[in-house]
Image 1 (cartoon, rainbow, N blue to C red):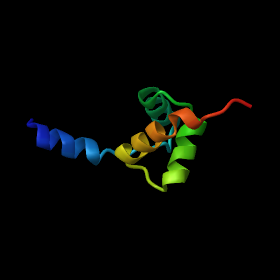
Image 2: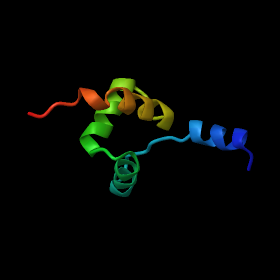
Image 3: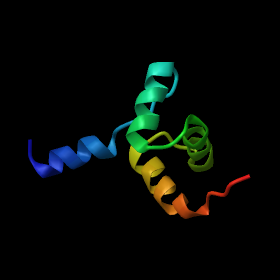
Length: 66
């Protein structure tokens, strides 16, 4: 597969958290908790991997401890 085709596949990857196994997969892959992932999905109003990854990267240093 060439790079252009690979990039297209990655851009179209959709985050599905409807089942527990899916939640576990995406939280492990992205290195976040389910709460953070759900928050990112709500904030971006999107389930595209590239949008969620960008959001998490931009907000990585804005997390705080309660």
